[in-house]
Length: 307
Length: 331
Image 1 (tube, one colour):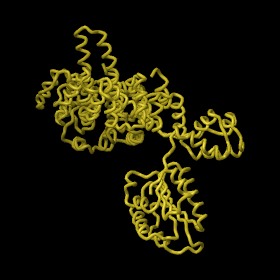
Image 2 (spheres, each protein chain N blue to C red; image 1 turned 90 degrees about the vertical axis):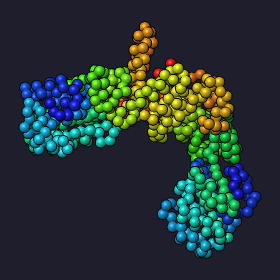
Image 3 (cartoon, rainbow over the protein chains, first blue to last red; image 1 turned 180 degrees about the vertical axis):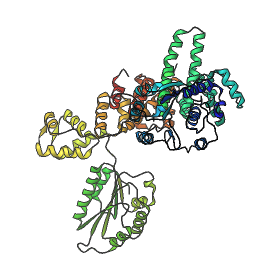
Image 4 (cartoon, chains in turn green, red; image 1 turned 135 degrees about the vertical axis):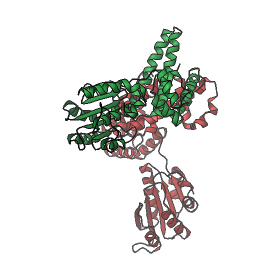
């Protein structure tokens, strides 16, 4: 197994599938790799690209020695193309897609194949997704498109249906805890592990924003018992990054649902579920890179969550 | 001396001409009429030559300084009008004017016309020099309550009379746009000289020219004046105002109302709160009215957030329609 992949044990089954597909020559021309944030989709995609472009692969495994492998390691391989937003939250524009398509039309420079990686796919706007569609319908030879998405439901349906969907599994909470412990992260609550991959938790640990989760839950409790004013809570949410705040709220809200179910308060649980919908709707908009008026959105969300 | 618009017109005939004047205001008609009156007075006093100079960033102040002190070829006395593009003078202009005011030319009347003074412009030294050496008059846009008196006075001058409905109609058609209001009166004078005007005559003669900006929305939104709210939205849309701005103005008020209802729920007295929320005396009655209406501000906030999603292109619908619905739905 590739050295990078072996770092992430939960990716092993999927990697095995990939190897089989390559040896049987059954790799689809476009595969949509999806899964929760922090499960290492990007790393996996790069490992696949490396294996596909390697000059002397062994059982669909990159040799890590050849020129091709070295070029890819420093992101300078002429036959690998990364299509991603130029700026965070700005989306992938149609011009960028057209450049990538022009590149796709050329024949490979180094060896037999070419790999195009698009991430995150949700941030393709409608026009850009449609431009890509034609190539998915009539793929160029020797090309593999690896598309990465957190929520494939947000991707244009016509585009999604042309790809093979590969799910990057979320490790079980126990597995995540073991892995995070090897990285030196110990204080992790199980609830957090059900909503985000260990890599994201590790990143947040390194950025020092892991305790925000606790902060959000404390503030949410205070808000629900009317000890914290709506606008104050909204202000404090604004100080976090959008995805952190949304994840935090989601985890906290799911905990509320579980508690309500455990105490047999069906009606309450149902109400919580509807409110969770509002959180998830905002999360989808954030994933799609919508440039929303976040202070307003937080206020409105809290108005919906208000007891 | 700093004077109000009324004082300015009253004192103009009573007092001799000053060396310098500074007329400022965003409503063009007011500044225009004031400078017209001033000019007529100056001509009557023998100022035979008039210079009008537009001051932009490339204005040649040194040349102007030499020119203002030279003798005119055509007349012994000159009326010099400087029209500023902004409500604030840049450094070269300040320097030049200050040097001029140190040693003004007795044969010259200097008049500055500018838009509304920008922040801190009134504390600039040059402005205080104008106050002490000449006459400074800021013109403020007329509020809706002031319009009836304004119209009545003008109509009386033209020997026209209107009913109360007619007056209301005139105001509705031209609110926020004094130039249009003045034109409307001129038009009516020409069409129906010295008559009592009927509502139909006014309706036929005029077209809607009322102008609003997003700040006008607050009052009608809070006091739930649905008809005026819709008319304003219509006018804002027609003048090409961005929906984002409208939403911003509305959300500001909704947020304030949320805060106020929260404070009210705790039983705190509102009188102590107004200054901390930055609500001026003039606006307080609006919020008080809104507080008595028992509207669901949370629901309005949620609707506003939906408008935001629509504006950013991630939802279906028309933002302007959503704005209209903020007042028409149960809220």
